[in-house]
Structure formats: C-alpha cells, structure tokens
Amino acid sequence: MKFFIDTANLAQIKEAQELGVLDGVTTNPSLMAKEGITGHDNILKHYVDICNIVEGDVSAEVIATDFEGMVREGEALAELHEQIVVKLPMIKDGIKACKYFSNKGIRTNVTLVFSPGQALLAAKAGATYVSPFIGRLDDISTDGLNLIAEIRHIYDNYAFETQILAASVRHTMHVIDCAKLGADVMTGPLSSIEGLLKHPLTDSGLAKFLEDYQKGN
View 1: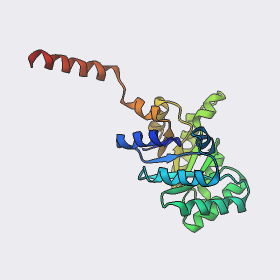
View 2 (view 1 turned 60 degrees about the vertical axis):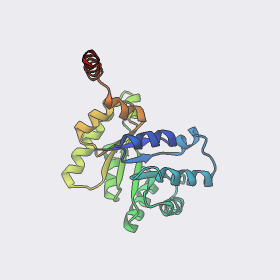
View 3 (view 1 turned 120 degrees about the vertical axis):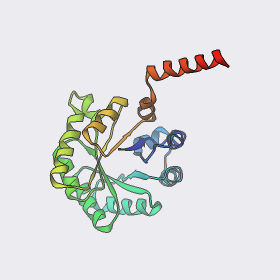
View 4 (view 1 turned 30 degrees about the horizontal axis):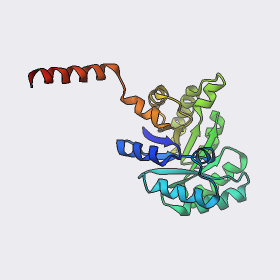
C-alpha cells in the first residue's frame, strides 16, 4: 500500500518524507488556501516546491470545469514537473479530459468519486488513480469503506490498472481498513500515518526495558 499525505503544508510533507514511508502527495485548492497559498503563479511554484521534497507522485488539481479548460490547465501542470499527476473532477468533461490525457501519456487522478459507477467510468477512461472520498461518505452516514470494497471487486473482475486511492482518510483505522480491503493507496493527514506507530504495549515495554537497563548499569 502506498502512503500519500493530503496537505499543502511543506513542514508536514518534510516530516512525512523523513519518516521514510511517504510515496506521494495529494493536494487541492482548499488545502492551498489553508496554507495561505494564493495566486496562480504562487500555486504553481508551490507544486514544484512539493515535488522537490518528495520522490513520488504529486496530484495537482485543475480549476476549470470544461473540457478545453481542463486540457489547457492539465497540460500546463504536467509540464511543471515529471512527478505531477493531473487531478480531474468526476464530471462528464472530466472523464473526457481523462481519456485525452491517457492517450497523451499524461497521468491522471480522478477525484470526488462517491460511487462504483463513477470509478468504473474513470478506469475505462484510463485514469492512473481514482479517488473515492470515504470520510465524506461516513459524514453522511454512508459506509465509505464499502465503496472501496466494491471498486476493488470491479477492478479485479476486469484487471483494470487504475489504482484505488482512498481519499478523505480521517484517522488511523481508516488506513488499516483500507489496507485490508486492498486499496492501492491511502491519502490522509500526517496524524493518520503517525497513528500507526502507537500502541500502549510498545510504550510500556520500552519503558520496562529502559528501567531494567538502568538498574544494571
């Protein structure tokens, strides 16, 4: 399973990278705004700054909602850095753009996916990644993890190469559950990754080891 961090915060990206398990980054206009990154040129520079920190894929989202606009923005984003993956919305023109980029050899991430049918269309259009938002489904009392299971089943039926990128991951158990279901990638906050480190028996065991060492030295 690949671990992506979902943020535009360079300090958190560096911290995740230093942990040695980071495979990529996803971000979006909301996360950019949260970090005070505004203005077209500043946003593009920030994407490059992220690429210079990590070794894996960096999803950069288009703002346009029409086919021509998405193609124009996506091509510009792809030219920024070889690690850039063009992030497209799950709408009709987004699927058209996905197929266009797929034919051009430009990698894509189809985002805002909330149903198996949407995921099937994205795979048919040649998406590199599909991003089902499990946390947002949980927020409306719908089982987000079941969506991961359904997409996994469909993709395995037809040997689609599109990777399932579990998005809107909120906590550590989301990571574990997505791994059990066979999601190819998870993207979430740094806390969801660091939470995997924690267990009270690890803490108490280490404390006992150190205590016993101090007694004899």
